[in-house]
Amino acid sequence: MDMPESTGVTRSDIEIRRGCSESAAGETAKLAVIITCFNYEAFVERAIRSVLEQIRDDCELVVVDDGSTDGSWEAITRCGVRAFRIGNRGQLGACIYGLDRTRAPFVLFLDADDELKPGSLAAIVGELDERVAKLQFGLTLIDAQDNPIGASSSLDAFPDRERLLEEVLGRGVYKTPPTSGNVFRRDLCELLREVDYDRAVDGVILFAAPLFGEVVSLSEELGRYRVHGRNDSRLGQIPSAAILKRDINRFVARTEHLRNVVQRLAPGRQLVESRKAFYYRERKFCLDIVSGDRPRLTALPMLLISLLTEPYPLKAKLAMVGFFVLGSVLPSESAKKLLAYRSKNGERSALGFAREFFSLSCTDW
Image (cartoon, rainbow, N blue to C red; front, side, top):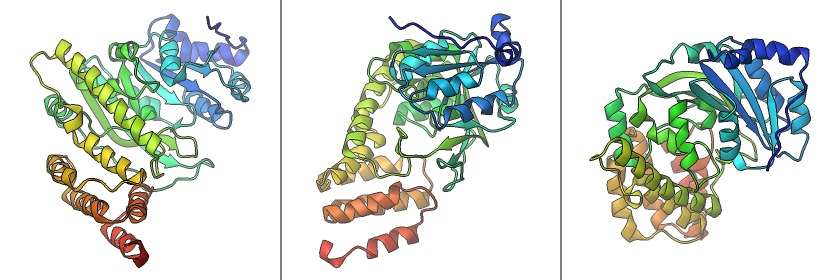
């Protein structure tokens, strides 16, 4: 049994309990920020202080050290916040542990290597009411030294709940930021207790949200997403075969879980079969490339057909068509170079893609 270890009560801890956290005892907190940390000594204090610097009476903060073996716990205790140290359970287990120690009706799971921007809590709380199941907001990409990198992707406002639900049912996914860019209503978070196929938290609750209520999308970038060598998402890096296999298996398992949720909450509605979804076909195509296998030409027609119904701009679709066609006919190493260009951060363009293609050595053919 894991024995939680709380920080000692200091003057700063008492002040936080009366500001960001005392409202939990008074059951008036509207938003709980749960920071989970595993061996992020270099970043966790910045994550915590990004919340503390905008203390509000309607927010509560809990930090969970998920069995770190570096100096993370010492960095956490320096902040004087309500914190717990547990045996390693993975992100999902740590988030559920924090969930059980907060009471606010809305929850933001903030990764320990990410941050909130000043004023973000006020902007978030102002949008929350009982109709909202999930709120998402833009994230600015930064590197390990806090420097902005790449081009931030804006989020579109969702037209209405029904159309978003139709997109989820037809695709199994929709455009959503990673963990730190989302706020969930507590009843939606209860689905996490049903997850036995994943250690991550940004899974089924993202896509089940329109079954529970409205999904609010804010284009404003209210947080910072740190890109470094240990990101689980491997953002900006060519995905490895192991990561792609994990993504595919997780998508299949999550889709089946989501199918059960749909049957419970919207009986009669149909969810796409995972292996017919564009996400599955696209990931499998990339897996073939990084594994050194030329993607089967027989799979190309269905991949292109499934792309037609995806909600991407025409320019992006044309670029993907070029990638899929070339990836099916080029030698393995050339296809990997094109995938590397497609995976990188920053501005990408048809011209850049063409330059990458023509820069390939003639000996690769």
